[in-house]
Length: 395
Image (cartoon, rainbow, N blue to C red):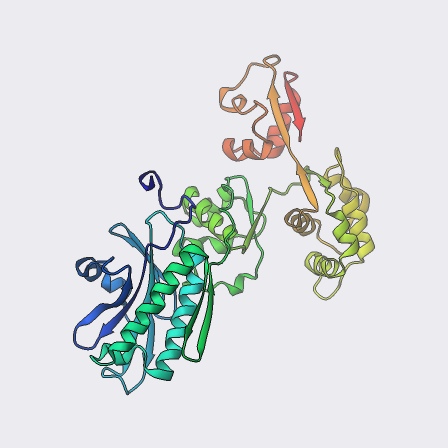
């Protein structure tokens, strides 16, 4: 059954094994305890040990290794103290999953269990006494805890580990489903401050595209600006959406049409949301626009009315707020919904241009068509208006 699954399929498998690896001052990396017994052979562990017991620079952070038919997540932990033979103790508490399995949901409990072992080591030398060739009962105690955690997590998704006067509650966090696919015509918007991104927090491609996530560049444009393949940009943005640091909206243009949703009621009743919105859309720092002016603008969105129409009628610049940021904010909050144009060629009128008219089938909106063909929205609108054989569906 598992042969048809693949990494990234989003499915969560069970924990296949759990083990404690340590660095022995004489023997080097080894498996101290594991359950089920002998699940990971010495030969396979030795071939993976440089990842499981890594260099000192990689510590106190989750690592995941997918190799040799195993997906292993662990939390390498170093304890520096002169009482140890090499002035440090190094261990890694790991879970083993299927190669296709999603493992991010296990990471918090692996970190918590590792810290629990740190506390027990400081209190009773749980880890060091056995590794130095004495204290056999300590190894049995660790084994018993691993068996309990393995069994409880696979059957109940939670466990309470007790060791002496110490206890620890563990659980598998509930992860949301994978975000939907990201398309070239969508616009990623950072929902956290960009200065909170640290280079070592994300992969190289993600750090390369972050400067171009200004809330108005679409995926295809970001790909061109950052000189990164669009497929990689989409994958990075999808990952950022999953981690809830990016939201997705549509390309902003003054010819766009939006309509309010039932969530408009939140703007009227939620004072905290009102204040956050007003601060976000202010044109001048420290000078907040009047809420009534902003709300009047929002409630005027309706079918057939473009952003340009509203700006000419209500003048947001004079009222002190930025209409582009307002639209962006409201779309992300679900208060506004974009009404897209879908051109349909009826087979009549001007002779079709295959490169363009293949998209006029009611399945592609004008944002998609512009990004694919390279036409501007004005050029596309002009083509549509000039051809009486092309109809437009708004939805």
